[in-house]
Length: 323
Image 1: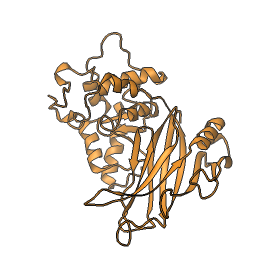
Image 2: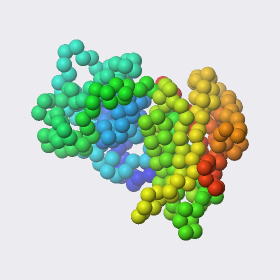
Image 3: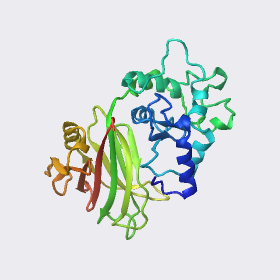
Image 4: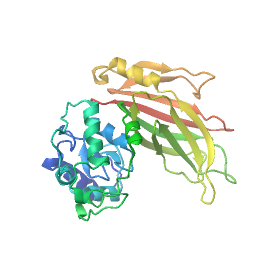
């Protein structure tokens, strides 16, 4: 488990996952969950993970148990809740008649309706524990990490949040080259990636025009996914951050190729698609989609747009929902 944390913290999280009640998804009972909501304190499966991501991090901050880097606070929050049984004793305290908890094979609509009712609208909590206008009577230490994860949501927001996801995109931000100067002699660059309503941000690399990040991020891919937006900024302490270039990333070649081949693990290493360089995109050269060690990946080098200089290297990996 590559968590980038002390061994004792990694061990605590692993031991918690191995507890009997954490060996199944908290929301649909699917076996062997590999994802978690760090602020709610539950372990969840890949399909439920997609719904949690659609709620927003203000409600559920989703992390991979095996792929993401966890902070000490996030691990401590999981330990404080105690796992799925403890969390469900609160969030599923009163499931009304006519409401059925989804099973592992439930459709997206049933799964989404249940999860939103459970966490966003708190419909299954004891009435005395429900959070109203941002204030809560939750005093139990086992719910402390979760009680700040809700906010009031209008009916319109609920309807807009019903997004169906078709897979996950792992993005590795590798490095930048010859980035633009925005301070006296250098810049403090960081990268922001956006897909739909989701946004992730790399760390800031101080005083470096050729930064190396090698940081990985997960984004859920909605059914109507469009382009992924990339922007590079210079971090400023006392003023607004300056733009250092941008690029639009076409995901169609990766996703359509991956879906056409299905289970990539059944094939040897091979090229299955290509995004062609043109005057209308930011590619420095053609970007091929390949099956490598049973995974669908795409390397790309981008020339940042609307800026005097700068290139960025990325690696994309497609992860199907049924993996």
